[in-house]
Image 1: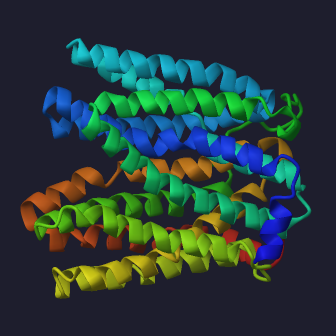
Image 2: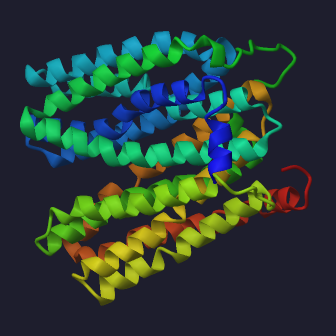
Length: 407
C-alpha cells in the first residue's frame, strides 16, 4: 500500500494540485445544506428549499459536463477564470436578493445561475492526475482515483459539519460566504499551477464533436450511476429520518460519518491493489455488491428498529462497497475516450450522481410523512435494485468489454 501512495505523491506537483482541488471542492459539500438552512431561515419553507435543491442538482448535472468539455478544448485555467467569478457573483446576488425580500423568481433564478457556473473540480483534478502520471501507468491512475475518492469522503463529511457550525454560530448565510471564499481561493491555487495543467485540445474540424452521452458505453456507465446517486440521496434522508423517529437526532451525523468511514477506508485500501480484472467486471461486481450490502440496512431498520449499533455496522459494511464502485466507474468511462475528451467524460460520470440525487428526496419525504420511516427504507433498496437492472439494456456493451475488446 505504501509503495503505491509513495509513487503517487512523488508525481511532480501532485500533492499541490490535489490540495488546491480539495479547497475548490469543499463548497460543493457545504452548499446543499447551507442553502437549505438559509432558505428555510428566510422563507420558513422546507418545500421551497427542497424544490431549489432539486432544481440546482439538475442544473449542475447539465452544466458541469458542458464546462468540462470546454476545459478540454480551451484549458482548465482559462475556464476557471470565467466560471469562478460568475459563480461567486451570482452566489452573492442570491444571498442579497433573499435577504432583501426580493421576489421569489429573482432569488430563485440567481441560485440556478450560480449553480450553472459550478466548477467541476472533481473531474478536473482526476484529469490532472491522468496527465501528470501518463496514460500507460493504469495502476498508479487507479491509485489516484482511489485517493480522490477518499478525499471526496473527507469533503462530504467535513463540509456539512462546517456549514452547520457556521450557520449555528453566526447565521445561515455565513456558510455561503465561506463557500465563496473557498471557491475564490481554490480556483486561484488550482488555475495558477500551469505545469500540471493538461494541454488544451482545440476543436478538430474532422473529429466527431457530438456529446459523449450519446455513446453507448458512456450511457452504460451513466445510467447505473444515476441510480446510485438516487440511492445515496435516499439513504442519507432516511438515515436522518430514522434518528429523528427515535428521538436521537444527534445520531444522524454519526451514522452518516460511519457510512463515509467505510467508503474512505475502502478507497485507501483499493488504491494499493494492482487489479487483474478489467474495469468493466469491477464496475458490474461493485454495483452488485452495493445492492447486496444495502439489504442488511433494510433488514436492520425494519426488523430491529431502534438498534443504532447494528444499523451503524450495516452502514459501515455498505460504505465499503462505494469507493470500488466509483473508482471503477470513473476508470471505465475515462479509458473509453481519447485524451482530448477525458474531462468531459469524467464530468458525465460525476454529474450522473448529482442528477440521481435530485430524484428521490420528494418521494422519500412523502413516504416518511405518510407511511413511516421503516417503509421509507425501501426507497434506497429499490434504487440499488434498479441500478442492477439498468445494466441489462447494455449487455452487448458489457459482453464486448469483458471479452477483451478493450479495457
